[in-house]
Amino acid sequence: MLIESERARRMRRTELKLFLRACRERLTPGDFGFPADNRRRTAGLRRDEVASLANIGLTTYVFLEQGRDINVSAPVLESIASALRLSEEERDYLFLLASDDPKALPAPEYALPVALEVMLADMKTCPAFVLNHHFEIIGVNPAATLVWGCRHNPEALENPLLQMFIDPERKVFYKNWEEIARHEAGYIRGHFAKHMRDAKLAGMIDELLAVSADFSKFWAQNKIFQASGLETSVEINHPTLGLLRGHYVLLSPFGKTNTTICILAPDPDTDTGEKIFEALRASNANM
Image (cartoon, rainbow, N blue to C red; front, side, top):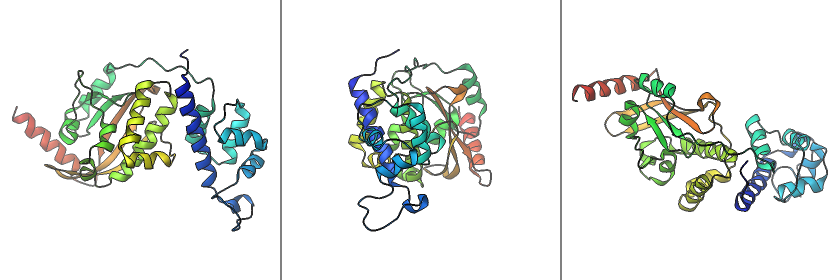
């Protein structure tokens, strides 16, 4: 098992502190029978109210939210998750952050599985590419090259999630850029919780926080999205194909957390699929 570095440990504890506070502050006291008066100095529930709802000691909860180096049992975390009304994904994220014995980082698999290679080739009008756990492209189909211009170059792996936040043209390319970017930031957060000891991944997040005010804003919202079936509506202002509409889907194939397939499924009520098909046919005819 890999040893967690002190830097990664501090980073995990900081994320736990910010996450618990954000979850607590979004709750409405009146929904829990607590008085909602003007004497409250902070939004949402107070720490003592969360401790009461979770039936745990106030000191335990305070230390946990302060990011102190303490160990808490699974039942305590379950009680806190219930008190804060966390979703299933948020609960899993809480356990990842609060555990002092996280699972070892799986060995990265950068080779594209044969099954995914076949799937990509058969997805004629669905642009799709496959990412490794550093969000770098390891496989792409012709439709994705047509729509996004992305390619797989083993010598210089392209990172489309980084480009989403550092390339200003993306805000023009996507009509609903903010919605897509917010979902991607939440996906990065959920993914990072499973790989906090990965120095390259941590460095990527540090870079994004340093250079992108948008990413910093979305990161601070503490939203968690997993690639078990994340779907976002997409509207693209394509320079040659015109307006494209569909659904951007992120999937983790084979139950692995180190491979993600990203698909643009054309909206069947639009001519998006037809545009992609005709453009690919014209491209093949000119080869």
